Image (tube, rainbow, N blue to C red):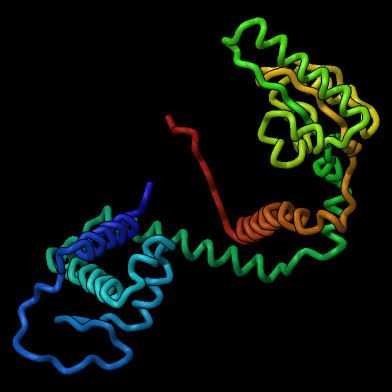
Length: 301
């Protein structure tokens, strides 16, 4: 659920966008020409100003699509108006006494608590420092199984399509084509044979890609593919959902655990939340031990 602050920002941005589509917001009465604003300001109004620093900071918070929308001079001006509108709305809300409402004050307190707690945790994490090589290697050694890569094979395929609703003759002709592909693959390069075949892999010279068990959508094709043992070996003709296919083993990659050096960045990323949790637990234990805490949740008779 979005906070009221986010909701207000969104409303103001939508207001600015709608004005950019043809309805200008500059409707304030003018008593005559005004002196140019100092360079450090982008807007002035009764009761306050919008500084250029504030305007630039709020601009940087915009999502990329909206940032592009406000890139023009007119868009930048309209964005400044949206910031003025926000200030005017806040001023009017305070004038009506809404700032003193308990529900609003409670939400402000809760937001403040979240922000200062997050700042405290960030400070503690910085004080703890970055993970050492010894920590990273130790975590990798203790969790090597998480990095294990299954056996994978790279396949070539030559496909002879047939229409599912086609005649028996169409199916027979497709099978005959596939059997011819299988014979040709015994002595011709895959790309040369695939030039006569069907399927999207035709644009890649017949290279279907790299797969682990369970990743090929057709189980019959997968069984035939993983039965191949040596690169260059060709499968029998297999009937699939797409047609009759022949696969050729191009490469077999055995299951492996990559060395630490290869996955160091991933180790660092996985260890980060573990270290953050340790920092939090240590901080919490320290604060609890230094406080006289009493908790009773059982209702008294």
